[in-house]
Length: 416
Image (tube, rainbow, N blue to C red; front, top):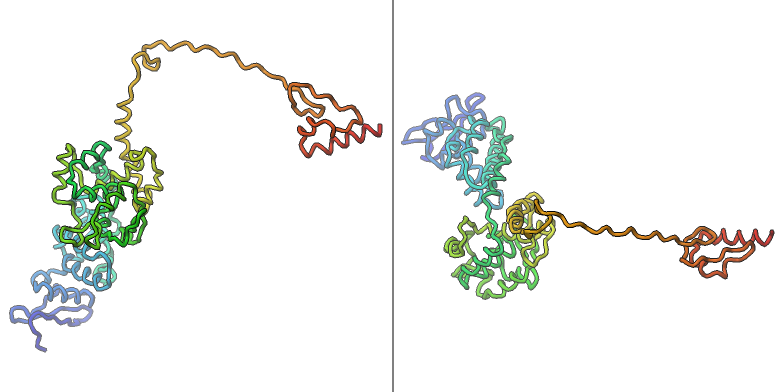
């Protein structure tokens, strides 16, 4: 059978399969020596050859990078949302030596070494590890490997602590200084991001149809659910200052949706505000959550559950990180507390003698004939046979259950 260049065929050789293709005018075997253990592996090699035309690499075995391309293509055909983001994340695999290893030769130690060499935020590394784990799961389902080498690999918990140390929260005075440094045309964009705590992509996707006088509706949030975010007065003023020249609330200069990146002069604005720390655009969201918890805006502290709903966190652990950042504010507040030099709380000062207050006099209350406390004026006792209804003081003092005893007492007196 004649094969045109760039095409492959799969031949069964006993229990194994081999892949044949035309390379440089010659029919050659491009599968590893000994063939493939399953037809699925042979099909992956054939698909990789058609895309790369690299027979020499395929003879060494299907690499993780080659299999990953087909894995992402299949996810795109299934309509997986965020496939563009997944292709971007997959670059972390292709840029490392892990992507060049044959798929069947990768072990857990290789995954751990690859993870140790990754940089960036903890969540970014966790996303790359999760995508790699799904890729190996697909290889297991297609019977290319026996087990997932990344199944039990986890990012160390200390990575989250390192991320918190890299966060920057702007104090109230720094917030004002930053807004003063931002040009008037871009100020509504910064104010809205700061006061609403929206993610950058969520803010740039906002359309005027999603904005009302009291709240905005965030479409396609991070958890793939719409959420309602109430607008604080500065956010309402920022939205009102925007011209409705596009369907987007904060469009690009040409009226289209902005790209998910900070304005080009962002770092110049931060420097002009006198802030020497590194401040990312996403730190405006951290500042929003911390300001609500600390009560910096309006003087009223928000409950942590309300801040969780406001920011759209799926679990409370994410919101509790902002409470951790309040420790810096607590330390600064403690340093600002001053005591007078003559304060008795300071060591070396003689405490003032407090006058001993006389104990309150004990007041004996008179009681009626049934032992119920009354006023200071002694109430007359009931004589045998006297009906208690004529005594309004006793009638008011007696509980309803005691009236039966009073009537019985009166009846006994009359019989006597």
